[in-house]
Length: 427
Ligand code: URA
Image 1 (cartoon, protein in one colour):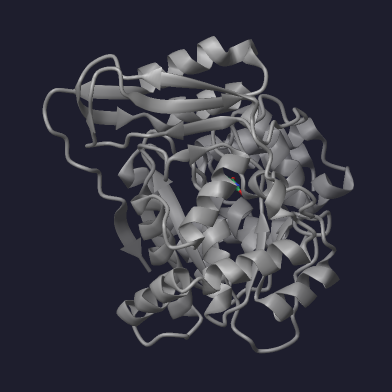
Image 2 (cartoon, helix red, strand yellow):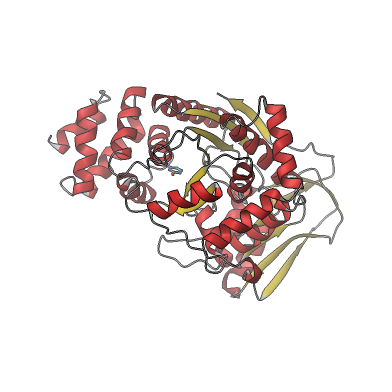
């Protein structure tokens, strides 16, 4: 295989064979294909796209670049994956609900990306929490407690790890075949039987339009099915943050509230709905109504909270000492009316500026920094009322962050309808 010839073929819009894709990806992992050649290939795919067959070949090449977890028994295992959002913390709520329902959830998660948060960063805000268990310990905990949260170890899809880092800096992230292969290779490596996808759409999501999100969902489902997995996708709203808290330890606190049967209504609703679809895939309920009832029961009786605490303890975390920011700053409403928008991307960027996210891959996160929004779309607001609280330790970017938050919350005189949270369920 001559890398430049293969790149030219894709650049010309021709279909690559399974062998060509496999050889190219393996060459990249082993070092015979250079970063600049993979970058050119990714850009060619960005502009030319991939056929269903090519996307599947790429997924398989990435999947088999590393280990595929094999639990060695026929127990049903189900996971959830979100395409990423602001304040999206459902993994910490869902995994214990579904585990308490008797289904195993092997969860391999990622870090924050751009303005979006990542499950690993949220978990690492819990003092001591270890996200780097090896695959043997991972499997043991999944079998014992029903769930385990880890990061993408070096054995899992090394091709994706390398390619993703390159995509991040070459403007090739927002590309459906590349996103599909990246997400599905990692999920297929977990040893699952079923997957529930939360495909976000709106200003705070990578897929801004509903049509693009539905197209991504359709492609993800197709790849999952080619991999022999049952996949359900929920297309959900990310025009405003999910829940009220944005920022790592603030989000963990909100998860504890939600696991205690309280918490913001939208976060509770989405957590129940995603859990219900997982419970259905795990065959622990006859229909979606029964699955929803079971998910609510596990939340409201405290069973899911107990399971979450067990998981945290097993991974050496201590929930008694969540980090707290030294300073707070309140953003006030400049007029009275009804909230028309809480623009998720700006809120995500403001939180990142306060230290809750990374500007560069090697930046250190301030786990206690972030934002709590007190108003959501359609809420009534009085002039001078607190619409958001900013939590921070160094004031370097406070002015810029608070300005962004002020601009992100739009208020109108007319009453505004609450956006639909769950836009579509696709199978
Ligand atoms: N998340 C992933 O893991 N990969 C992508 O390409 C996009 C989001």
